[in-house]
Amino acid sequence: MDLIQKKIKRHLQTSSAQSLKSKRQGKFGEAKLFILQLLEQLEKEPENSFERNVMCEDDAAFILSADNLDRVETYLNRLAAEAEENKWEQIIPKEKLGPAYSNKVLTSLIQAPSQLHAREDD
Image 1 (cartoon, one colour):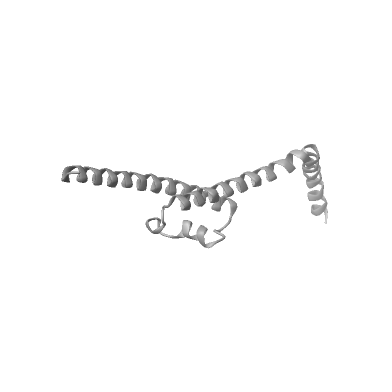
Image 2 (tube, one colour):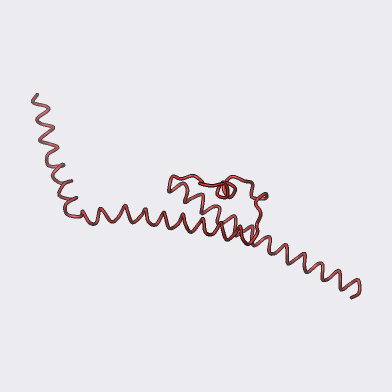
């Protein structure tokens, strides 16, 4: 290989590495944003050192290896599943209670004025 071919090969390797790094930074930044939103929604904090590193460490200091990005994705998926489960836990009991819940609300609204009058008479 002559000198020009070596320079071209080195340039392509550097460009390819920079492109990969850029893609990984984008993927990490997006995942971190979603994780932050989910942690706030769930009113949680990172539970272990890896999760704290993801959330608290400077993005530039986080090692963007394929393994670390897979672990970040797993963390994100776990939080998303937990948020979805919480959503259904809040919806389902109200649907199951449906008429009973509505009757209780109506009964309390009907009783409220009579209780108010009873207090005024005291």
